[in-house]
Amino acid sequence: MAPKVLVSDKLSETAVQIFRDRGIDVDYMPNLGKDKEKLLEVIGQYDGLAIRSATKVTEKILAAATNLKVIGRAGIGVDNVSIPAASKKGVIVMNTPFGNSITTAEHAIAMMFAVARQLPEASASTHEGKWEKNRFMGVELFNKTLGVIGAGNIGGIVCDRALGLKMKVIAYDPFLSEDRAKHMGVHKVELDELLAKADFITLHVPMTEKTKNILSREALAKTKKGVRIINCARGGLIDEAALHDALKSGHVAGAALDVFAVEPATDSPVFNLPNVVVTPHLGAATTEAQENVAIQVAEQMSDYLLTGAVQNALNMPSVTAEEATIMGPWIKLAAHLGSFVGQMTDDPIKAINILYDGSVADMNLAALNCAAIAGVMKATNPDVNMVSAPVLALERGVQIATTKQSKSGVFDAYIKLTVVTDTHERSIAGTCFADGKPRFIQIKGINIDAEVGPHMLYTTNRDAPGIIGTLGSTMGKHGVNIANFTLGRSNTGGDAIAILYLDEHLSDAVVKDLQGTGLFQRIRPLEFEVV
Image (tube, rainbow, N blue to C red; front, side):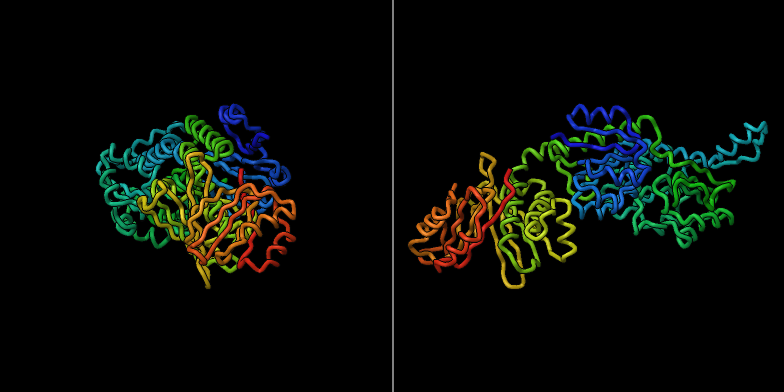
């Protein structure tokens, strides 16, 4: 059955057609996002949800989204999506961070010009038949210092454009390296230094608990007198009441705001001030940007639903289509290794240690980690997946450690997974052969070569005659066919293991008969998701 996608906000027809062309069943209902009750009623039918800013994907909506696998936001901001709830639900949240970058950066530059030269007021005055040439005295941008808060994708474009205007650019961004700053031609500073030196300040950061009111009353008091402030990022980054007071006092010479703490903004403390330029969240409002983000989100969602490729996800490592093809067998292997130790471990897990050896160490380890952790967690949480598993592990205080090393054995590559509890450690290693099928190659330090099947039996015992015969005869007695049989031991008379690949799920009666022989230390039926 083809995946089904709901488009609940306005997207371009080109984007909707991309879904159709890729073989995805798409329902285009551009006004549905505003109807919370109707969305709640129908969301359970869909594998994907494509949105802009009107649709609010709340925890309640996600609870009703029983089949949902991916949410695609055409644009950057995801304030309207409960990402923690989506992660717990195992739903990938994607955005399109590059489709409207130039448009938003250009709007910030335009707003900076507008507030520097009082263009909106001058235009309105002239339309009224006035000729107030002497009233509108502006300032040049040339040789002024621009303080950029957030020098990522959009902020970086603003820096580039400002340098073209021969401005001096300083930037505050905790994630900006000195080398990157030099390459961009900007000077990296701390926030207080930026506030004290900048003639213009422009914000380009997401809205988080750390950035909320980053320009607070206290921060605004630290700014250079006569500063002009531009915000085309997110509402809530500036304390609007404090900005009103700073504008009224003359400490802040002007402000240009495209975003507000509450939107739609029908009222704000800064409205109707003579030195304030305001626009109704137009940062991404160009024909080119709207088309770009819509096409990008349709392609990203289609890729994920059809091939498993993950791009621009906010709650899961990205995996390109090429990586998905190459890594597919290794992702399955990581999940199987995790599933094995998860099903074998009854005590609370304190840590999961993952070793990558050989060529697999050069792959996308973040994605492989997610698969391994999901495999472990599925034993007690069957609904967990690669998105929700790391969240669950974090909530439970499980420590995740990753190690990678050059080829060290007979295999070109392998993964070894170890879980740690208060009383013991349990490890298993595996590899992928040329046929792409995952294999278990070591358990408890004992070398083996076991194919992975949907129904398996794992036993441990002291090495002694009769084990093969007992296992075979017991399976025959209960009509259980053995597809594959693997044995291993540490040494003669030492620890020994057996792994049976069976054609069906093992009943309790079979386990009871094996226990009755007294030959086995441990008997554990195992189930694996094998496609």
